[in-house]
Length: 332
Ligand SMILES: NC(=O)c1ccc[n+]([C@@H]2O[C@H](COP(=O)([O-])OP(=O)(O)OC[C@H]3O[C@@H](n4cnc5c(N)ncnc54)[C@H](OP(=O)(O)O)[C@@H]3O)[C@@H](O)[C@H]2O)c1
Image (cartoon, rainbow, N blue to C red; front, top):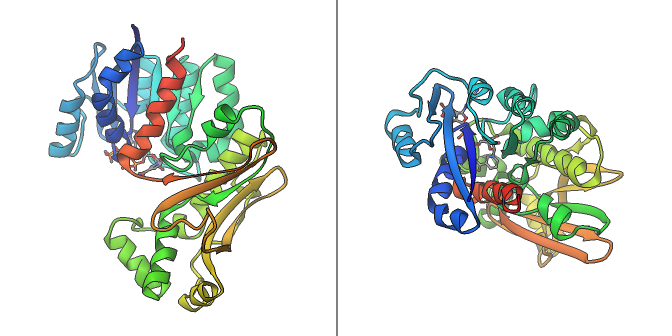
C-alpha cells in the first residue's frame, strides 16, 4: 500500500467536496493500493494539522458548525512549507489579477518538492509557463483537470485518452452560469436582467456576476486549454472576449424561429482564442441547456469528439480532483 499524505488548502465548496469524496472512496483507493491521508486542512482562518491524518468527518462537521476548520493559526503557505506531505490539493479562490494565494501556494509546493492538484484556474490563466516549468524542474507532478469544465474531462481526455491525435480546435460552453441565463431567457422570453436576478437568487450566479457574464471566466479556461493542449504561451490578453450582457430576448427569439439558439461559445486553436455569443443549430451537440458545459474536440484521426457534463458543483468538481490524484499515484 502506498501512503499519499496530502493537504487541502481552501476548505470551501470544493475543498469540502474533496474531503467528502475521499471519505466515500477510501475503500476504492485502498483497492488500487493507495492509502490517502489528509494531514492538513486549511481555510482563511487557519488550519487543522495531524501528521498521522486528520479526521475528515470532524473537519467537515467543525466547518459546518463553527464556520472554520481552524484549530491552529497556520496559513496555507506555512502548512505547505512546514508539514511533511506529498500532495497539495489547492482549492482557494480564483484571482486573475495577481494569481492570489493560489499562485504562491503552488510555487511553494513545487519548491518543497510536493505535487499539486488544483481546481483554481487563476494562477494557471496568469502564469501557466512559470508553474509548469517550476513543477518540471522540481520533478513534481501538476494536474488541473478541474480548472476547465468542472467534472467534464477535457484536458486529460485530449492529452491522455486521445494521445497522438493532432487537435485542430476545441470549442464549447465552459460557463454554466451564462448557459443557464441564455437557456432561461429563451424558455421564459424574459430579459437578461430578470434572469440574472433569478440566477442570483438560486445561487447559480455570484453576487458579482461580471466575471462570468462578461466572458472572463470562459476566457481564462480557454487560456488553460491553449497552453495545456496546444502548447502555446497564452495569457488572458491573447483572448478576444465578448460576453452575454447585450443579448436581448428578441434576438434569442428570432434565432429560435430560424432553428438556432444563441450560446456563449469559447473556441481555441493554434491561431485564435476567442469567446463570443454564437448561433448554434438547435439539434447541434453544442446546444446543451441549463447549467451544463460541453466541449467539442476536432481531432485529426478521431474526428469530432464531444463531451458534456457539470461544469461546477462541489462533488462533481471533486471528481476531477480525485481522478487527477489517482492518475498521479496509481502506478508509482
Ligand atoms: N465551485 C465550483 O463549482 C468550482 C468549479 C470548478 C473550479 N472551481 C474553483 O475552485 C476553487 C475553489 O472554489 P470554491 O467554490 O470551493 O470556493 P469557496 O467556496 O469560496 O472556497 C474557498 C476556500 O478557500 C479559503 N481561502 C480563502 N483564502 C485563503 C487563503 N489565503 N489560504 C487558505 N484558504 C483560503 C476559504 O476560506 P473560508 O472558508 O474561511 O472563507 C474557503 O474555504 C476556486 O478557485 C474556483 O474558481 C470552483
